[in-house]
Amino acid sequence: MNYDLVVIGGGSAGLASAISAFDQGVKKILILEKDLYLGGILLQCIHNGFGLTKYKEELTGPEYADRYVNELKIRAIDFKVQTMVLKITPDLQVHFSNARDGYQIVQSKAIIMATGCSERTRGAINIPGDRVPGVLTAGLAQKYLNIDGYLVGKRIFILGSGDIGLIMARRMTLEGATVLGVAEIMPYSNGLSRNIVQCLQDFNIPLFLKHTVKRIIGKHHLEKIVVAEVDDHFNFVSGTEREWEVDTLMLSVGLIPSIPLIENIGVLVNPKTKGPLVDESFMTSIPGLFACGNALHVHDLVDFVSLEAEKTGLAVARYLNDSLKQDYKLLKTQAGKDLLYVLPNTVNLNNLERINFNFRVSRPLYDSYLNIIVNGKLLKKIKKAFMLPAEMESIELATSLLEEGVLEIEVADA
Image 1 (spheres, rainbow, N blue to C red):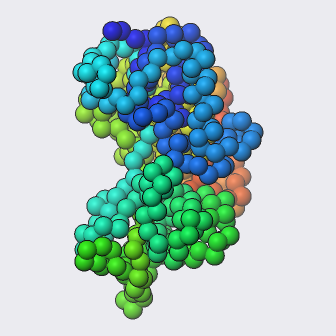
Image 2: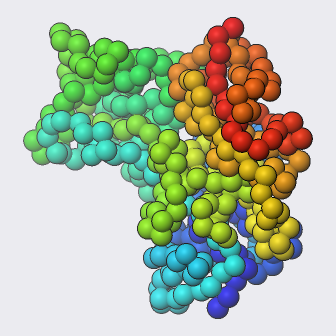
């Protein structure tokens, strides 16, 4: 069977991009979702705080997802759940399998990768010690508790101050567990400021900056951990070791875009974001293959995922009706001093009147300036009171101000 657009992933990015493309005239769309229901990770995020940007009201994760699922059903967009995508090809064939249809191959004119991201595990950060039950990622603990109804432990320690870990510190406390503390190897938190306040400070849960887990101890189950301070080079500081008796170590040590399907066909990957390199239309290095949401780069808020996905759906519609300009006026982007990355990676200045650039700083910065530099010339200087690695920054520029060459964004002292 042939489709105009196949969307891989039925979470917030997949739903928003499919609806946006449909509204722009792309009618033959198929969404493929591996889980039992549409909605993605939102279904296990039962706390509030979603929708403030998109809907101007506070929603829980399932409520936010439900709005998009209802919009999808109104438009009668095709979708398949409990479906595993096995591979895609450079000519945009999608191979998938499920219990109802068996092994299927569909041909598409465009594909959107909206596969989200995955958590870094114990193996990814090489924590020494015994290999025992009781060590798991915060997202998995969240699923066990909010979806399956299992409390994974009673005495909890959390490694890493990512937002999922902070939210689970509060959630476990509310369910009667004791959260002894949160250790963060960096000298600053990697979570949103509101989560530090609402999830840790409001519940008197200590945050140990410049600390990490040195050893995991247990025989048949986790019994204790050793936490120690680290210096500026991330080496353990002798004499700072402290043992904590716990039955659960929860990891919140970073998220990585889930893109093995497209890595296998040679899509160029951004070494900083771990997602694909994209242009202003969110198209990867393979024509017709797009990426958005956490499969492109990790976002702070689902509202930002939805807004980015809507732009991607619009870009796909323009691609399918040949509205994207083929004559290139190419601008490449570059992360300068104190920046981790800038997206998009390339811009065809002929395609859009205004471009939104997303970027993230590498360390907390206060009373500084953003310098927007094009081909070595200072285009714009923007005063910023503060910028944090945990919070994505964004600026919008008119393409009339830009020219072919290289755009660099850097931080300068006030």
